[in-house]
Image (cartoon, rainbow, N blue to C red; front, side):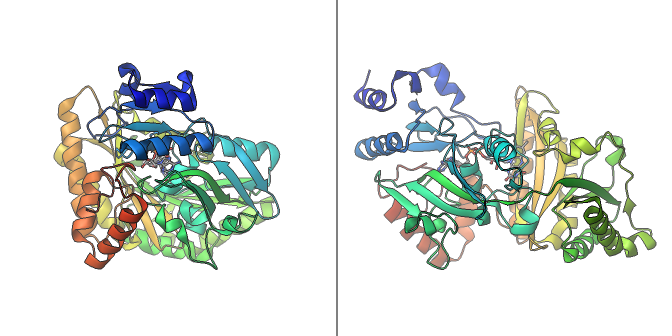
Length: 460
Ligand SMILES: Cc1cc2nc3c(=O)[nH]c(=O)nc-3n(C[C@H](O)[C@H](O)[C@H](O)COP(=O)(O)OP(=O)(O)OC[C@H]3O[C@@H](n4cnc5c(N)ncnc54)[C@H](O)[C@@H]3O)c2cc1C
């Protein structure tokens, strides 16, 4: 056994270390299309001190480290492109603190969405956080690292906008606290009114530091939730409809989906709206406001509310929505990737037409889904394709389709979300040179030896 392996075992013990090929296989891939690449070592730390020691070894030996949550970002961000040490964060899964009055929680850097949700339901039933529709094992730190979106995004922005502080292990192995927690015991702000340093980490995919604690803002959890779906065949009217809906400020979350299967959904666009309230009266009032906002589209016969059979509601009201994961395996064989550019809402018709063209051109199963970010400030448009991993031809067709999506996203004025390495390069080639210069400055100083998730945001 080599000396690096021995040092890592000294830190985490044999049970939480592996350099065996069969285990490296699982850490070499994700469900998406990026070719696999094996790590040399995998470690599963349980304490911040262990992460510090691991990072110090990586810095001394100049070998890569790749932090990993659940590995569900799908765009290859946890694939150890240059080998090295994968740090599997999942054992750091504790909720450390909830401040009920200040409505925030502090969790460890590998805490899953499901763990925080369950903890709050049991101990703080009047609070909740912004849960994405990814499987419940997805981690909170990784989700804010990639600027994910969840159930409260229409009201409060990206999930990363709801961060209230970070603790990070830097490439040197030092620990750094970001936000009010840098000088106060309270984790109520990620920066303001001081400089907001979370930007040195969030969006960098672990290429500047490893999050060991994250503070997230919590929001009121109302007693009741309901869902309505407004259906239209006019993609060109969707931006106007969303504008009217967001003007009401009555809706928790707005998702729009268009997909060819099952048949009931074909050729239509479905605006799914979620409402919350503490009483039936509150819900009824919100429903009325929304009906009123969309009334003119009903009168012009451009859309109408879908009568939702009672059996459908619980599925739609699930958080996270398991139906999203079920789509991921429609083709069987475990292949799923979606590109989700962040783009203006008025580009909805272009996006939805593009996904139909691509699905036909490459003969693929697809689902198009938009999640509204803020009060119609932007949307994440998910170009989702499912494929069978045992079918290399289908994988290649999906790869080509997603490549076209990347080109399209930039042409349509969008920016990449959870960008693949290829998209990162496209973005860096096209961005303002002074912005790129600033990124170079940050990366060079934060990770002078280039050991942090190398291959990602390689600005040099
Ligand atoms: C069916 C399905 C539905 C989805 N729906 C949504 C959705 O509604 N909203 C949404 O936002 N996303 C969604 N996703 C995408 C993705 O699963 C989530 O964003 C998820 O939160 C990613 O978390 P993860 O733990 O799997 O991240 P990983 O893939 O493990 O990591 C993502 C990135 O973060 C880095 N990282 C991980 N942990 C740390 C750490 N502690 N410190 C520093 N860097 C770290 C990794 O190196 C990597 O670059 C969905 C995915 C699937 C499969």
